[in-house]
Length: 483
Ligand code: ADP
Ligand code: MG
Image (cartoon, rainbow, N blue to C red; front, side):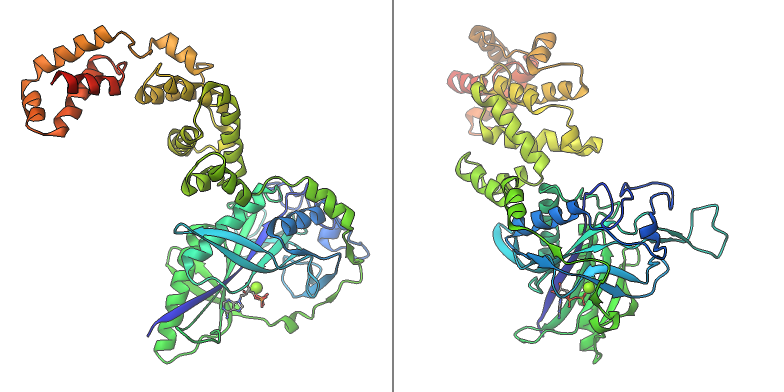
């Protein structure tokens, strides 16, 4: 029997505010335990939360970016549960009236664009952390509580159960990650937990209307794990049902080493949390004028930019997707484009370099595009020298590598320091060609016998003799005409 997988994601996006959502403590990652826990985060008696304005601004930006409805008036609610890292005994969240409702995120999958509908996005505070090992002050068999993370602002973005494969879910998570970093509300750091995903997974026989019972896999912090966890969980559910069993609604954890998901706790229903409006916080009122002001400061969004890249600059869909993968990459592209405009630099060539040597060098050195060692202006200067025939593409790549070392200011500086100009003297090239043809009679015969490979080999020989400074097209033409 065919089975269909149904997936809805809840993504916890840590907002990039300097201080916490209801206290003035810093949100900086990595400080010594409990050095950034304000009395509000520690839940000392008698303290009161005060809403962080910037966290609300982040929620507005998200609402605008996904085309959702931004609530003029939303309510903070207490979600009650007991856990050692939650000293208040409740988490402040939003329940009946979230700050954002609806909206969508467009994903690209196998060349197709598809909107993923959102249910809602609500503001809430993060909990602290239990620490079980690695700290000398904690006696064996005991755990420590670090409240530095307690009160960190989160935006929980909930999708409709509209995804039908692990790949689609991963594409959505990536697109959302790209969007929240793009609009500057999240630093996107997956290792530090700034973007965490819970995956709700169920299966149903193909053609059935009703959803099956879902399980929720908690706290996935890599896209690869997300995809794998969903595949494994769906497989488990299918096997369970086919063996005559029943899926129980529960929360599960993914163990990447064992390649399995494991039950963590049975799933609470909403009523178990005894949600009620938090009497310590007034309703969150977002004035239309403020929303408009934020709207006017919004950057061009990735979707609109992709359209512009294809329509205005002639990039392919794929190239446009790559160039707009992050805002940093897009900025780099447009800087190179500006710098190269008067130099006759082709946008397509810039895109190729970004996806080629720029990406591989960054990858090799573990750098982000913001730390790229060849600036966009330098890259434009380099591409211009290839375009005007001063150097070949191959030499261009050597120049790029030289620029990467930081020893030179510009492609021109590398070219003159290393004498890399392409040979302009046709007589000299003709002489090299004659030498190569005379020295390789066998290849010449093969070419005449119809083997095109032989031509490539002959061109290669001439290029080698010229130390890469001949123009390969010119050499090819010359050999053809001579033979
Ligand atoms: P909670 O997990 O807090 O109880 P919700 O009821 O809002 O919250 O659902 C959370 C997520 O589960 C949403 O992303 C929703 O799309 C998804 N979901 C709901 N029902 C199913 C289902 N049967 N299969 C898969 N996902 C589902
Ligand atoms: Mg949930």
